Amino acid sequence: MKVRNQLQNKVNVITLGCSKNLVDSEVLMGQLRANDFDVTHEAKKNDANIVIINTCGFIDNAKQESIDTILRYADEKQAGKLEKLYVTGCLSQRYKDELEVEIPQVDAYFGTLELPQMLKVLNADYKHELIGERLITTPKHYAYFKIAEGCNRPCSFCAIPLMRGKHVDRPIEDLVKEAKRLASMGTKELILIAQDLTYYGLQHYGERKLADLLRNLSDVNGIEWIRLQYAYPSQFPMDALDVMAERSNICKYLDMPLQHGSDNMLKIMRRGISKRRTVELVDQIRQRVPGIALRTTLIAGHPGETQQDFEDLYEFVEQTRFERLGIFTYSHEENTHSHTLPDDVPAEVKQERADAIMELQQGISMELNEARVGQTYKVLFDRKESGHFVGRTEFDSPEVDNEVLVPADKDTHVRLGDFANVKINSASDFDLYGILVK
Image 1 (cartoon, helix red, strand yellow):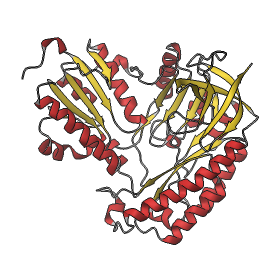
Image 2: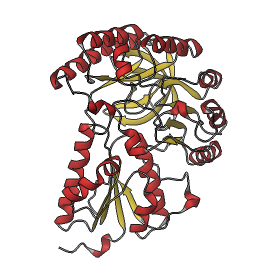
Image 3: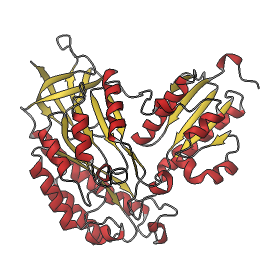
């Protein structure tokens, strides 16, 4: 069946996986738009003749979602509803040879760093002058802001270096230019992302430069919040905390995946830090930036994790009382060091341990939220949903953290994308409720 002519050069980009992938899709879309393509992101209307799927290859569930999505659009292509289907991103980088054999309906597969090659296949020019420019897919008042690519860390369980390569910094001047452009478009919050924010500067400048970058971004007019995600604990650049404490537009928030709380597991995971040093670092961060919200991510069921290791992890979470926390069950990834170890924790035990940690965190979060009742916070409103205006404090990232809900009654007026002061009058385990105050 022949695809209808009027669909020519309309591209739908599908993004799977993390915020770093989302930024890559936004850059791709910016290049396509500059080449006069009609481009959409995850369009509900099925009227594009070209689909590009930006895949995730991080863990089993994400890989399966990517494969299922490719197969769905491969079926549409076979049925004549699509003219071209392309696949890019982490899964494509990691399993390109296998995918070409297993799903030959895809016209071409591209790796994570092959944007120019993809554009060439699409008969589009790679426009170097667009470096840093992209089509934002998030609400315009916040944007993910990638400061580096790749990772040099040797974590035993992680396949990211296989898919993203070595750490490469983006120069400060380029990032400031991009921040100014985003601010001119109405962006108020920059969410800094990289595989490892704290490594920033070592590749390009020969020394850690996160603090200098923060100062420069903080000076950009119109940027009211700067948020840090994906920090690494070993050799943490403490001077970045001083800038956070000094600058009112740098959120008192830090996302620092710690992965475990057992010395045995930290060693097996090749994290380069002990439990004692981790606890000391958390204490130092809280002393340097009073009131900071710490978010962490953990892994349950890594090879070699004993019941005692899990109990050490449980005790670590109980004592450290993170404001925000998530946990994954371990995924046995090929070509990682951990894959050479027997995957010896049964799947049901992994899940039981993850559930126990989240139940513990639910209670901690409830206690911390109840302590906020009666306080007034600056809130950035993201959307209206189910009779409420929904926003966030500086202590919360979009989609993964707590939210603030304000009743959307006839006397309450909130403009989405704006800040307002909210007095908290009640709390649940993962949300706050309040009313607007002048």
